[in-house]
Length: 496
Ligand SMILES: [Zn+2]
Image 1 (cartoon, protein in one colour):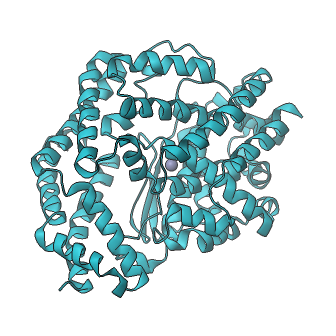
Image 2 (tube, protein in one colour):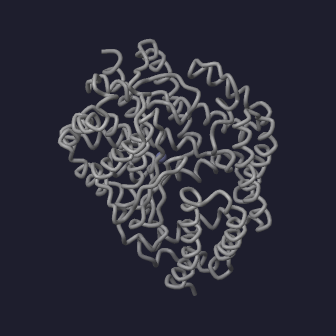
């Protein structure tokens, strides 16, 4: 007969392995010297193999299945832990270990080849890897589900509870409401502001980002800041949450807004109740909810006028030469400039969801309509023309731009747009309870943090995404708030 303590001790051993792997991952992305990688991957593949064996060991599998069968006897938190463990187990248990290993190798290789292919602007080089990755994904889905809608399985992996029906409704709203609005805004777009691409010395940028950590009340006893090529947030539990940014001398807003974005992820993790530290509920609820927090801080707080009413003088005092003639209004328009762009990660807040819309449609076609990899570049370009009115000049500006597919991550993209939409829905509820503008103007971000902590952060992943949205906003997810938020904001900036 299974008991919860045995489950916990088996789980703890797995956690120890994943903790070490995770620390090594942080190190790879921040400090590790280039030439250490062959040795390192050799060593780490042994730890990974051990970790996988623990995750599928008979002892652990039996324990989870038994407890799952008797879950009505458990406490609520225990039951949620077991349900999550069972779900994770079902994802891997039917995959033969040899195929799992082969797939891991394929991903490592594919990422390297993708980097080269993007650099050389050579889709044909990446094509065979992408074909294999897709075939593998289809096979993996078939191992665990007999669905005739494989994309649904992948969507649920990244955002539990979401499926094509719900995403179709969401993206249709974006298509019908946002695409025409964006076209209208783009007719009015400003001339490029030169202050945006002035030279801002890296050391001063660093100082400003340090200042932002304090503004947002990031707890430095529970986390730290470093540099990396791509900004990210890393965490093992609520008391170890790290973030990175990069500094581009000719684009200061890259570091400022990446920092605020990652701070959103980091604050979420730091504010999770420590009772979850030793459980599998110790992290954010989902990709979408996580992204809702990062985008809430980045866009709704960080790109708002009240926020800069509090902090623009500080920025100006640090960059007097670059910002001397720039008043707050010009600055505000500058950080909310709308423009068509090929590259998703460089897109502004308004056109961003259109980049996600086209990826969603393409992934759906890959998994459910079996479109061939050969056809992807043309399909990509056709959709960019349709939604963003741009002619893609080369595949590195098109189908080759994102890292996700090379890592086998299909079904991930939609959570980015979903996160922004959740954030807007949460924003309208928050505004009923807090005077957000005044709080930001008075530099009281801690009050905003506290509200999000009580309503969302403290629960970790003990609540599902749809439960969080329902609980916080008193209704299910509804994309109308996102459309309303974008239209209010950009009408005010460009059309009024
Ligand atoms: Zn993010």
